[in-house]
Length: 226
Image 1 (spheres, rainbow, N blue to C red):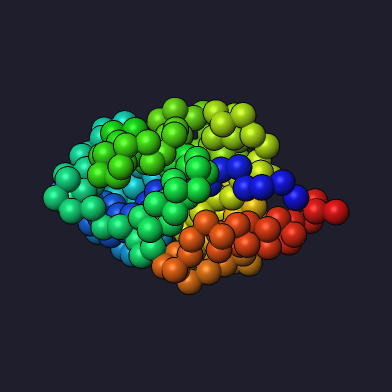
Image 2: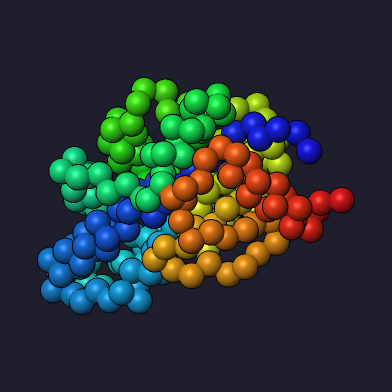
């Protein structure tokens, strides 16, 4: 197997613990229309394309705004909270620093839109991420494989040469279906075991060498591995 060529990072729940920000924003928007929002409904939105999430909110509440307005309102609420405090996930910044020192490029692959992704990335050293693939620049969001395939095209590498870091079932499906060996770090939701992926409890204590080992283990579990 070749050396690891790149690391493809999910953002919400993997790089930063913004899922509580999203859930709070969902409650605020729905309740402003006199509706009630539940954790069960919030969990349906984890990892989804924001337009899909907005559609689910419209279908399960009295909201009358169109999908784009719902997305804009949620993004604004989350960005304001990120501007006040970036809730980094354990081990994420340390792993990014190790990868940067090793010369391995990282791409952010998130269903959040560019405005929020930029607000997060601006709090990291310049050049930490070589590219951003966001929900507002792809035709098909996660769980479709397009976001991860787009990241690989930007880098000019094959999916099997990369490793994806994901926290949700939706994200893991997107990455594995794109042919990217995946490390799942379950957070809000449990992630079913899936060929082509491995699971860890946390990124804390994982450096470039450790991640490379996980990448190889995920690749070896893929049904396409010979």
